[in-house]
Image (cartoon, rainbow over all chains, first blue to last red):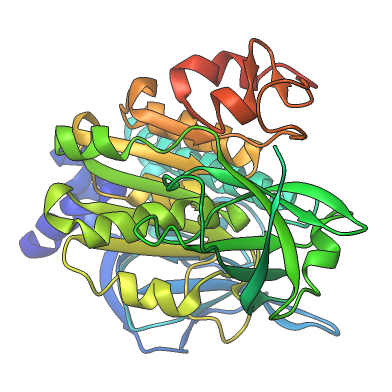
Length: 153
Length: 271
């Protein structure tokens, strides 16, 4: 557990988090591995965790009729994947497929929700960090929507 | 101001809408510097400003990577070996390679779409004069995997010591194993010392603005950032005013500008 706490502390998502909060969160964390092409989760499944990626690349995909599987974004080492556990109905909206072997910390969503409710200081810290992820992901999505590189664009 | 007519030595199809034309120029009026452009003239179509995308060490071999989007560039896509096209140039300002070599700073290249073409001469020069430069980081964003330029060279460049090449595409189908996202993601994750880095940025103007914001956030001074601007160039010599950009003529004062000189202008609508 001590080792896990040390490793968690090194992940950019948790940089600067107070030790007491980190200790609290460590109870929600587990090491996970996925082989290339393995799915971390599928659209419609219950959203049970956030993944703090340590190695590898994960593609967020969706099946589009007539176009097959479309990759929307990829998430890489140092980034965070998944916050659907924060909001009802707690379901994944996309598929997440390991493009290459992936190592990550899985933070259990139920556990996180309970701890954030029990300790609002921790909750504020956690939500602030997720909000930053949402902010950067939104900025990325807006840039993609602009389709900057299209002909004549 | 008169074009010299040169036969195409090789026409390389890069992507569905982009071609690289190599021209053997026996008598170039001047060697070109990385970042400069030529005016290419096609009979019956007209003239367009196209960046030089070849190696400055070979001034007799002019390479131009052209995306077919307009009245001149669309027919240029159909040009073949042996066809003659008119060339005027080289024109414009250059990327600050001497400054980069003198200062020993690292070079961070941010290219979007066809914007990799004007930066390719920089890469050739840095690789040729490797010891004079610090690290070279190339971050390149394209629309889809099929739109990536110079795919073989990208793989070769990243094999050089001290060279990092990272790619991203805006969208991809399953089967693409690279990154899907935008160039600012690459920039956010890139490892460099802001004080010891010179950034060269080329791509659509909005992309360059986003990159400048992110570079500023990372602590890179606008005095260390250079942008290559694009405007409608006609005479290429600063006479006609078609490419006027507030107090500047892009053909004469640019296309390469230090960011602190033009950043305030980038936010002005319809300028």
